[in-house]
Image (cartoon, rainbow over all chains, first blue to last red; front, top):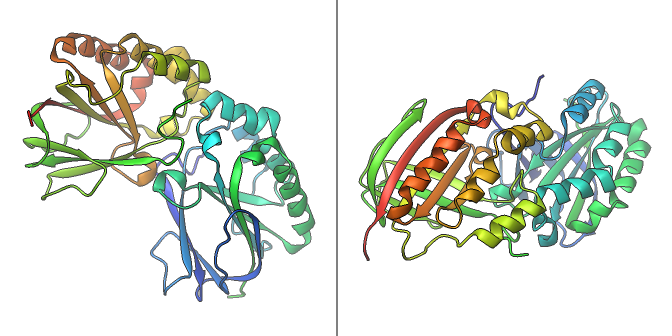
Length: 188
Length: 188
């Protein structure tokens, strides 16, 4: 089965500043300390240009809670990033609390899926809301995860429903920092 | 429950060269390409001194397969690193195959524990054989994991049994590079 993380984890850099193909339209600070604002976002696997206001790094790596059955269903329903109609994107960096990280694998999985339906909620909004998860915690970054979403503007209400469902879940009681940036793609 | 990885992942550097408190006594290449030899190992959380032959980095992070019940039993039986009698140490860098990383979480857990008894095997040799796992894959390192073992010289036969059991397991059919270094602590 195709798995982009099977060969080597992909390091992705997100940099906010004067450069990049995404224009910032919205910044919201949900939990904890905010991040600085800036007009453009550059998402790159190479060194980022210029002097960004901030740079966040994350790795597209093996999924830590997804079963084979879930992975097959996600794959069947997903269309991936970079679709021409997906001119809107959202970056949500989150950090989870020490209490979350003190849990064992079975406890984290139970909260993540059996109690919070994280994978199932994301599945409902496929293929309209495409998503890629980046792991940052082991890199010593300020956030634990960076999630990147892409969708067509007419699907933004669905995206807002997805966020509302996740933020109301038990899993989110373990989130201790969350910031949200929305962007419009700049025509090439 | 105490969990050293709950607050922040700890980045640990292993450097082989002319510096360090551990004298190399043995190098074995089990699977795949070897690593260069050198007389001393430095294990440090700071930048390593001198010009090492190689440096490998890994993060002590959340355990990916360990249940709460297993974590409690490991904690109860463990004595940790740095015991005065533990004058012998072993560093085993391993890399797992793309086939392993293409598996989903439930498939990896099933091979790791239900079929290979990885945690149970390690448990049998506690507290004599102390162990610390470092995750390297998401850092873009040449190996996926670095395991560090410490024990008193009279327990080396037990350590060899532990290695024999793990290397005979189904999990090890997914290991595609493995090198083993043994060390004696240098008296301060």
